[in-house]
Image (cartoon, rainbow, N blue to C red; front, side, top):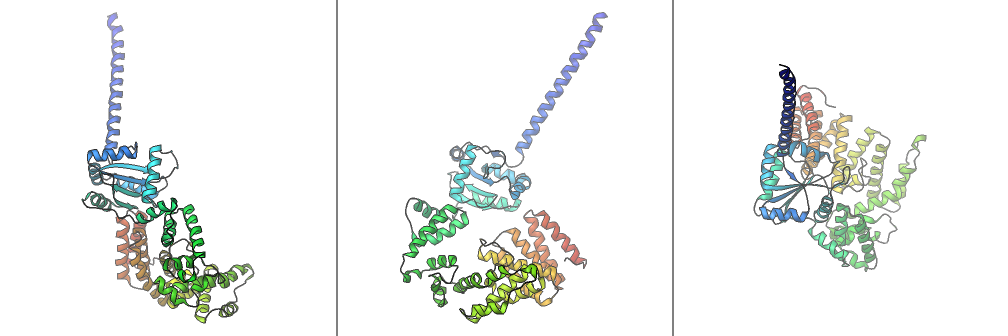
Length: 472
């Protein structure tokens, strides 16, 4: 009995120990299984050892390679991780067809591996990764077949993958010629006929040091070129982009004979835009900067116009004054006067006149076409919020049709944003049915591209329009 009494607690202790141990093992196994399940769900991104080993493996397995170029601060990148890469259909296709690799393009947070840094540098050099996320697809032989960027919904992303593995798919590199020219230039070969093209490319690729070097060489070359040879499309476009004074010896290439340069470049009002910019810098801008608004000062428009007329025809002077007035009203926040002046400037002198002062405070490095549409959309949105003038709203509806059409070629976010502006203007003009139709288009585009915040806003507007409630 005594032995049993002693043995029973020992057995109970052992049983308790083994039960705890078994439970721990079960929990550990469960945790391991859960971890494995998590690893197996979604796209399986493999660790990058080196690009050489990566493409050797792809060739040996006969698999394509998908590379996700991301940054730690990129919001669309995080949305892709959360919403798209975890999708069962996406995962099944990509895990079956591709070796999937993630490459961090920045150095924020946890330091990437040396292999990552080297591959990121190589990809940047070869394929000009300018926005994030960027997706690169390579054949089993290591040849790039497709490149795309930006957030993609499930359907669009699957389409990218399917196109990439379709036999015969080829990638047309927009920087192929530039890359070859840049390599040659670094090797000492200077192709002056292509130098303006190269300078334009460096602006896109943000290669500042190379751009500075190219500009220095190009300016020196042009300075030694006989005048008759300056009448070349590339030369004129570059010279026109840097002229800032009527005293510049190159100014006479564009004024007073504007037609010759326009014809060579093949662009209407090319010379006019250059002259308008010079007039702004020499006559209107200095006055606007010197006015003391705190003391109620304002420009003397008649005096400024009289000064311009001493050197230029009346059409140049009137356009310069109207553009300056529009900027002035924008600066002092006189919305009513700004919108009225804006419409006069746009309707009388065309969209290009909006760039004299880059109304809406659009940055100077924004491409001209994009800048114009940003200005037009901004003014239209202002009209929606601040005016009920039917003529003004009608004018905005007219120009927004063009903005919407052009926005298709920019990105989905900008496209549905411009459609939303148009829909809002339609509703304020009393065209309720048409407004709902266009607002639904904006909603569907936002949903397709995973823009939940915009989709929520558009749905709210649709509900308000249907209920006859104002959305402004």
